[in-house]
Image (cartoon, rainbow, N blue to C red; front, side):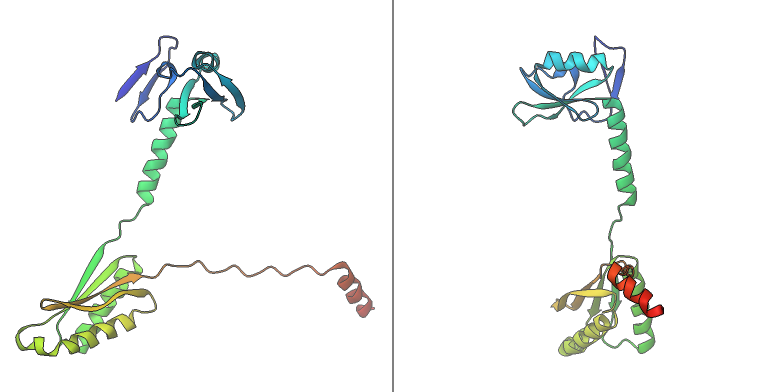
Length: 210
């Protein structure tokens, strides 16, 4: 952890990742300053901008070094870094790693085994994972690879409601495989609210009732 103590302030900033120039590190001749509430304070020297930050017991942070002149903002940098770190942790927490699950079959697979593997694949897809489905050919089975292709296409058709077929069956050595990806889930549309009758229509309705 890096601790920066400015000679003009009693506060010590503990920074996990120093991503900005702050306070006395900013030595530009001129900067465009933004106040702590987002107000534009104009162009001034870095020293003047630093004095304003000190007066508010805050930090001067360069937020746009590539601008001409560079843009600085008055803020509590320690609090800013804390909030950024918190957001990054939340993003990682909510981020899901998509895995590739594999289902293996033989050309002579029976119906029960086929249905069991199909259910497993559908569960993986429902959980948001991709699925690789492969058929392994042994010995003389290589002479009937068309059986494997039919098997794989049938498998993909039975998953069509929840998955997309990424590529057609392809033979690589003694294995033929396909990849299935889960379809994106679209939220259901909210029912449209009934429109209020126009004044003229409301009067007509009233007259009809009389």
